[in-house]
Image 1 (cartoon, rainbow, N blue to C red):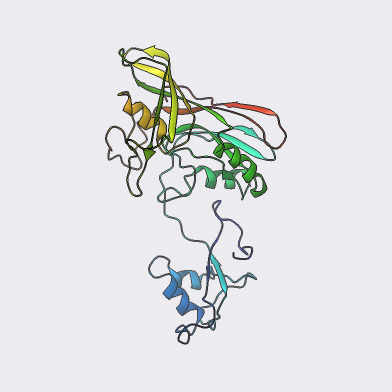
Image 2: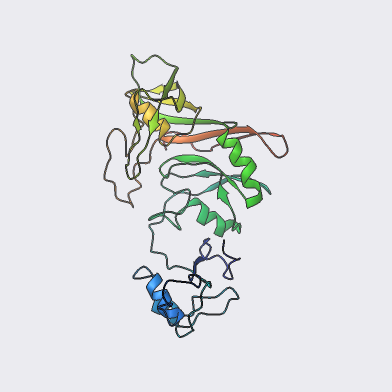
Length: 303
């Protein structure tokens, strides 16, 4: 593990770090200077000459790395990457609850939970680290980028374990609501139980026949509005795309789902048709102080 970063967070993100190799390479180190090693280590991905000239590479003690510094083995170097421009996601992150241990937010659709791929600054974690001044805030469970509603985060590292275990052990009652077509011939409520799997690199998850059950959802119809209804979904497990795939499997795919039944090519800046799926309620017994906690979204369907 690296030592503590000498650079403060920037845009809610910690500095990236690199370490030169230890001594004892099969041949003498081929890099006479730290600048030559950085060019070798970061070819084309980072503007190394530009960052060196702006003194944006630093050592553990905060000193700027110079292009001509003698190469040194087992040496940490820190820097902040330049982030690409991102389309601003509409809608606010509403703070539902905040205390010393937890922050619960009501997330809009299209906002990524964690920074990844083309969504870095436009993510809940990065925005909250910056807006709330909480550099260690991190999510305790998953919420898809296109899903709206409640997301719970730990304010600091020491609190993560207890609350993450609570989600992993199924001790959190989660309730979702979705807008989907009504099938008069479908008997409800129904419990869907099957095995779901998602291959790396695939957009869609799939049902695996004759495999042990790993996904279970209770589905109820709460109200009907013409040809569509508001469904109450109670997941008893937390597989990727579970709710979306379970409704699709019943022949009632969620309104404006960009993946089910077919993958749609939607521009990254097109926010016109949010997935009509809302993480509406979270309820649990706090593992730290034993109090009963219930949180509800302020959003309603249709989104």
